[in-house]
Image (cartoon, rainbow, N blue to C red; front, side):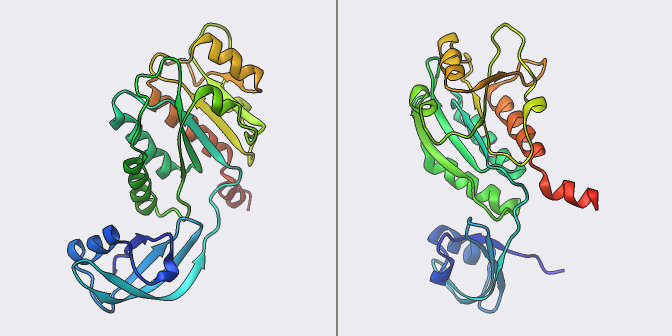
Length: 244
């Protein structure tokens, strides 16, 4: 069976792959004129295409058909986290969250943050690679870093919003509160956790304090657990198939 080759192009109708995708197609995969490829635009569409020109730095194609994809879940999944000091761990989260299914990733600058500058270009490339690898039709949105206060002061936050932390006191388990097929947002703090003032500020802004279980998790692990719980709560297609 012939392997299907997926490439990312935010402007698929241009008929030409972006330079980095073109080099991968022609220099690494050795694709040539007449080979079939699939273009994903990151906006929910796959485009079946045929290579019409292939050089070391250029790959042109003609689109044979466009195939809109059905969403795998309903309700936007949004995770906001304070990047880890070791950026590799944040990048690992971004990759795995994309494979599981996520709509938006935001970066927070918190009181206890150990990293306040992030090169989002590299994470964006990781999101593209993970989207292609997992055959997702939608590319997650990556938002620039914002201060904690500025982020929770945003007016466009969903009703279903939570802040996960390790402070004392009883907190409900996130998985017990998530409503299916509803926009959701979870905040994950830095390695030193959110400060009590940040938690109070978030609660005043309508966030619900939650637990992710009995284990104390690293930042990137907590972020992935929260993403997975949101994804499970929004598994509309799987639920429909089971009901049938």
